[in-house]
Length: 347
Image (cartoon, rainbow, N blue to C red; front, side, top):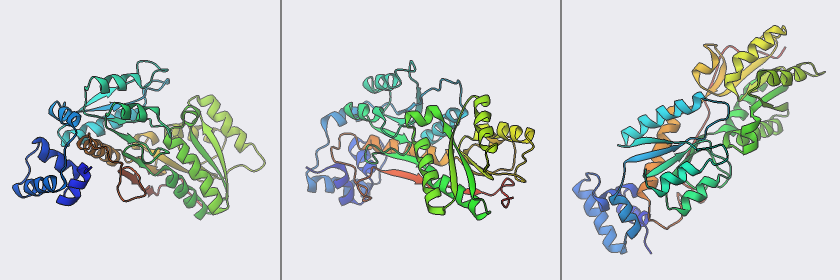
């Protein structure tokens, strides 16, 4: 049975264009409309009746499923809410924020939005390597796009910063400066324990970097409790072989880390070099830090585009096939290392 992708391939257009022609929801040129209609007739394509019904009741709303932290407001949520709202607006969509009603029921709000068709698709944040929300949405035939790189790359469309390569690039830059004993400060234990994609892939990057470069990379989990975080740092710097460099994937903690180290008489970069991984500019308090910034605008645009394309695909029973090993449509953003004043040759 022909799918919407088969029609798109035969007509030489995107699947979303086929959807627009069939639904009449967008203005399409006469030549393109003719090509699509010819492909539909040639292939005998019949849109799913349920999908036609959904298309006729579109809301022009995207749901943003944002898990809440038990530690209160996090700037990352606000940044992406703004970025996604701007990107969605360019596609003619509004954004509905969906948050869980309780810590133990993180998918209930999203399921309610999907069952009630309050939105046409959802963008999922705080994605886990094996995220149960994906299967739940698939069972409801509700399209989603993931802002995270899941273990099953064919589960749903996804986009993310390449966190593994980000850590590898950071370690490589420190090694080129002569450092051989490094401390990788991973994300907080809560994120690591729940399998958040950025946490898991960051740790994988540290392990890979150590194996490839032949340097010692000590992996330490960060903490939202400054007292506990500084205790863990002190244990490393008081050891017989203290680190000469830090790669930190918990950027909001960096100003406090710098103050704590200075109080101990340890100066950056005189005594220890530092690279921030996945930061916002304001995380660093105006400090000129060597860093890999989180590409919020690029990620927001990619997630929105993938969600809109997933909406056009509703009712197509065929598997994802983008010619890349069966992976779902995706955007993996390579890291860009910005040189600052916090990396110096190893002492």
